[in-house]
Amino acid sequence: MTHEPVAAEAATPLLSRRDALLAGGATITLATAPAAALGQPMPAPTGADAQAAAAPVLMEVSMEVNGTARHLRLDTRTTLLDALREHLQLTGSKKGCDHGQCGACTVIADGHRINSCLSLALMHEGSRITTIEGLGTPDRLHPMQAAFIRHDGYQCGYCTPGQICSAVAVLDEIRAGVPSHVSADLEAAPAPTNMEMRERMSGNICRCGAYSNIAEAMAELAEHGA
Amino acid sequence: MKPFTYERADSPAAAAAAVARTPGAKFIAGGTNILDLMKLQIETPTHLVDVNRLALDRIEDIPGGGVRIGALVRNTALAADRRIRKHYGVLSRAIVAGASGQLRNKATTAGNLLQRTRCPYFYDTAQPCNKRAPGSGCAAIGGISRQLAVIGASDHCIATYPGDMAVAMRVLDATVETVSPDGGTRAIPIADFHLLPGDTPQKENALRPGELITAVTLPAPLGGRHFYQKVRDRASYAFALVSVAAVIHPDGSGRVALGGVAPKPWRVDAADAAMKHGSRAVAEPLLAGARPAGDNAFKLPLAERTLALVMSEAKAA
Image 1 (cartoon, chains in turn brown, yellow):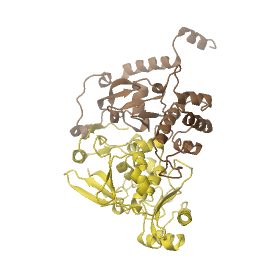
Image 2 (image 1 turned 180 degrees about the vertical axis):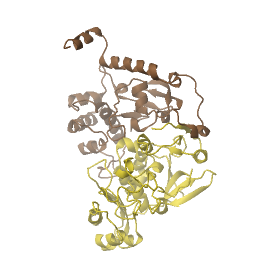
Image 3 (image 1 turned 180 degrees about the horizontal axis):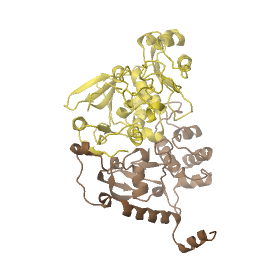
Image 4 (image 1 turned 60 degrees about the vertical axis):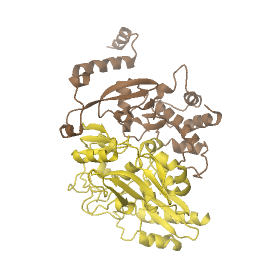
């Protein structure tokens, strides 16, 4: 018994845990999905069909994700987050609360940070979406990613992709003159202070409590430029 | 979520007509409230009419004074607008006191007006709630009422209106402009827009079936100093226990509305008239007839003290 895990690992030496999960998920989908989910044509729904809408309804949507044009056929209920994670395999954006309270799903849509769990994918026809995968790569980190590493702005890492997407957009919001609850003068340009960072990042929860280091990473970048 | 069909509307009147002719249809704009409620199956629309493509996303000057705010202007854009920051500071302050940056980027002017209560019994589908399931009863009455209304409630519902933006709009005497499914338009004073629960707490506003908000207008600037003081359990990203929206002139006159205490933004003429006479004189008519439910009785002294803070800041300026 105690040798089994070792043997199993040895049997799949080139398959990561994530790849294994993805492969498993795909098998299950093929085994159980209704014909409609496998790309069979379905009539486009109209308002008149709404009363009979008890079965899942599929519709098409196109958007640009991290610079690549994507075309998807989705259950109308699919959130932007689920489209990214489950259909485009961009699993950097995380599902924390799924109710817009934790910020782990934060992505940048047409230049603005949003909770991707509280938006339908269909509402993003023609949108330009940037996720953590589009900000930087391990070889070419986005300056905010590098600043998070320098300042130890994370511990378990689960909230980090949302924190970084949010942080990048926060600096843009400050540069654009968007006021916050702690801006003393509504008419003056907001300053990139520690208090401003804390207030503006309040929609991103970190259970490990890396907040002070996150604020310092952001302040450094705001001061020295990206 | 329950399955639904979906369409994108290409004109306000067409959107209104689409919702009116489809039983169970709803509009979706920012979606930050309705999608949350759909996931919990508190809202179960069979058809969504996406209004995001409508050209209702501008803030325009009204000839002769005032501004018209398109229904789809996002909360961030409204709070950041130069004219709003300069002339309607109470509105900018109220918006940035609410929600998070991500939510404000998505939430719209019209959708914010229509957001549903955060009463915990409305959210808990295992509990009776006259707002969610008319006639089922109210579990909040006799329940944990700390967050709930102290004034304007009824024996059927003690939920509060949760928003901040509308409290500022109430103090500014905003007007809500709409289009009906037949193409007709009307203008509803914000004072008449949100309804008290009475014996129909499921009816929260003056909109008729299919009627779509197209804009909110603000009258010419009032001058004076603008305040939005929000008291909540956390320093940020929490609903108000009590909030005070006020515009105060150098002579001490002005106007005031409360959030977090009632089923709608709460403003009383006699309280405005007493502004020169101190917070006690204002609080008395403003909170006359209050019926706290027990856990929330603290909101009455809290409202008066928050008012006192705002009035002393106005004097110090």
